[in-house]
Image (cartoon, rainbow, N blue to C red; front, side, top):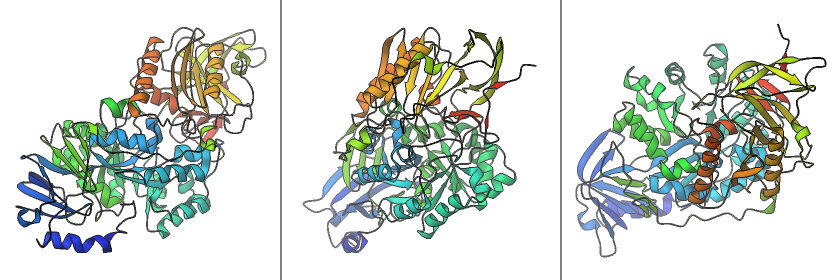
Length: 600
């Protein structure tokens, strides 16, 4: 079965009807389970699910004659039968994995549908990169739907990407079989200002009858927010407060509540349903960004649903938010999201609706995982050399590339500093008074250096600034070619020589994440595909990511999932302060600012 929505319906409908009518045997019957009906929010004991051609033919009290000599019978033994879980907004690249290996990692956790926005690879390889992700996605044994990236660059004029996405690119992608909409429209100032390019992308999506994804990362719920909603985005996952979620749904948007590896935004917003009593149909659960360690050790959408329940959400409502609500939002309610006739047979067996152990996973009528083990092959795309040779620095970097010259004659400076906030995507715009030695600005205390190294066009450009909040000690540096969204190279360190070592090492291996201390490499995660992903198994990547986390901790960083914070320091569409290849960006005003201010 392909990703084409209902393309196979004329071929399969006669068989479904015959099975439902009892005139033909089913291919598979799941017998004797509790049917969790997310349309009516009921748990109905004593039901059988009859499956044919990879779809549900009927759900009945007794399959009876529908069980033939060749019917595969799965005994539910009184367990709950729930729909396969859907991740409404996510970036596969954040797992450091390709679509195939990401699928292999999440299938045992019960995720059978993903809506991914590959805007990370779009920034590196443009439309060709999106097509590569799309083409591997449609090979998978579960539903991996693609949203065409909308914003590369995310903030025109404030960063330089490897490639730019155009309205023509969007229009072309809307004809591809696995494209279900437009990825998050991050340029919210552009939409609010009626930028013709942004509106052209939205129009191309709407003409195709597909969903426009949103991203409004400002706390301002006034005129700019009203203008953004009027521009067409249909959802938003950037909410962090209850009032954010309420504002979205009141305006007819879906509010996507995310729990990723480092984003903990469900608890603050789920109260809109659990305490304010708002209709849950407009609320959807998602992950946004999950790294491989989270996928291997903690789970995926099952983790999000369990968390929502722990925050006081009724289990059946939480399941609606991770199944039917998602399907409805993307116009796929007749395809996925519930255990009802005609839908793809994506089914989970679980013995507990609160703890949600994923005991058996069926996707498109095929057993794909049991007791935490993936039982199916997840085919790989043949990634070309153009996708594996993307780190171009222009020259061998040295300590001098990371020097920050003080204003002439200054003995001290007042610097604008990026402040890291644990477990949240936004940063703080801080200030620090720093000493000057031999004409160079020195690091002091919590304030250390950050650099963005241009890696797409071999310009040799290095932008230097300051960051605070990681807690690093000693002579160290960490470098990453995962640098949302432009995906140049971010280097953070307490020592300029270590920063040069780390940056040059990533150029040598073709991308990834590395950490150096006192001239020694403590950890390395190789990401040879676009400098973003590995085609190694998730467990292998997770083990290397674990060692990276341990190395960060050994260097003094105790933040939860600090790597995610590191990777977002160049994301110039989320307040308050970020770095780009063009300098420091104040995202509150969407303007570049100087590194130094006058001392009072």
